[in-house]
Amino acid sequence: MTKMYTTAPLPFQGQKQNFIKQFKEELSKQRAPALYVDLFGGSGLLSRTAKDIHPEATVVYNDYDNFRERLQAIPKTNELLADIRVLVEGIANKSRIDNDIKTQIIDRIAQEKGYIDYITISSNVLFSQNYANSIEALKKESFYNRVRKSDITLADDYLDGLEIVSIDYKQLFEMYKNHEHVVFLVDPPYLSTDCTTYKNYWRLKDYLDVLRVLIGQKYFYFTSNKSSIVELCEWIETNTGGVNPFYEATIVERKTNINHQSSYTDIMLFKWTTTTT
Image (cartoon, rainbow, N blue to C red):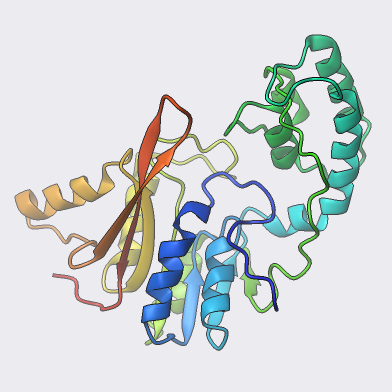
């Protein structure tokens, strides 16, 4: 493989393109373990990066959201976007699309048979960071001209070399938790953020359950300051004597701007030892 991906080939809610530089740096500092297991594979960007930095390592990518199907549909998605591009011709970039043109776009989408990559389509016609999973959801939204000017590049090599599974993260963890040289990549949906495009609905209990996989393991864990999960674990450790899964973990922070009015802090925590207290 010759291409080094710094972002996923298709839009994906929560992909880690803003943290790839720091992630690569930390991976490069360490001797490659025998195994990386990406519990919440998402767009596959963490798995792809781990394999590129340490090609001799085994990297297990949990494609629970079926990103593979979206990659395979790129030619069809390009055809659909090409037709939408014609419909929005003359509309300024990022400007609102009037209802007549919106109706024509919806009608064009409705003509498609079989699989439609609604996440990619919606990223081209909805306001930044907004996504829809169905034509019914699209109909409820205001449209904006964010249609890309060229085709999406084919990404047939994107998942090359990865071992791909599609199972619940808890089951995957049980399969590898006792492997001596495993490092878990843990990037669950963020607490207190929009999780529209994820397959399952996440409750507070679900977010906290994820922390169990960190205890006694080597890992990279991703969160944001919106979740306050790091502070919560520190409080539990200080006030109850409970185990803090982030004990002795290294923390890296990066400010992310959503738009000119709002931002949040992305957080990466990692630990290369199995110390728990």
